[in-house]
Image (tube, rainbow, N blue to C red; front, side, top):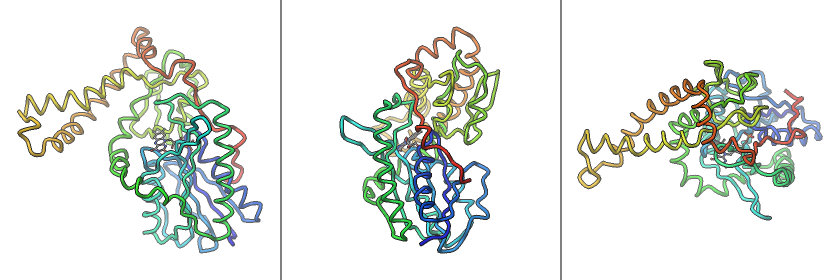
Length: 351
Ligand SMILES: Cc1cc2nc3c(=O)[nH]c(=O)nc-3n(C[C@H](O)[C@H](O)[C@H](O)COP(=O)(O)O)c2cc1C
């Protein structure tokens, strides 16, 4: 059906690359000329085959019920065309006893599909894929046995999807959850506009950091800079979890107590104080109280988050503070497993 397949992928911990590889393998067995290309902040999509006999695919994780900003920016830069395209978003799959539980897409497919549709592309496939959740800041990595069984299940789903899409059929499995996706879409918007900047400030390197600089070198969006001989996460961070899961020393942590205190101050105490003491507003008396509350939270909150993160980073050079921050982080404990997709799924020889 197709003579070419070009898959663009972005990944934090390998799931989206594994999915891209499965589809590429299937295409190659059918004699389709295939390229698998990593999306980076500076990638320009030029030179890939155009026309209706060249299929284009996008594989990426779901972040905050949306596609990662690096993917959205890439799609905005993407040239106009008329190729058929498919979108595959990997989500937070889990397994409870024998039950595989799905993640949630929100706008992760709909928004990219809208951008590509406006640019003239024909949407031929929307496929979510529930690979292991990699959000290690909020839960320990899944056990290896569970990871393996989730991968085996997804490989089968991917085979079915690839066979249909490469036969020229339309596959819209992603639309099965449309009502829920639309319902949670306000969270997707809030995440992309605001939430991701707060999350970018939830990483530190503790005293185990030996300055190997692997995190800085491998960051897929070049968001880590070295300050005071320690990695510092800039607002470009996409919280993709690559650094935390790859650090050979397990030195990268989420400082849970620090984050809890700062977020409690920023998202509750500070706006309540400002509205009550400075503006003399009470929930009963002000008609637009909730709206004003959110406005005050945004205006005052982000400078406080950014400043407190800088202060924390400065104090981390003192052993005492470093120890307190580290010991009040859950990710430092041994039982808090890290996650990365199994190596066997991660080769990419087709770029
Ligand atoms: C910051 C962050 C936000 C996430 N948000 C979602 C989400 O909204 N819905 C979901 O199903 N999974 C979510 N996940 C889980 C990942 O999308 C999922 O584990 C994905 O398979 C990771 O793919 P990758 O290894 O290619 O990065 C999130 C993960 C992170 C780190």
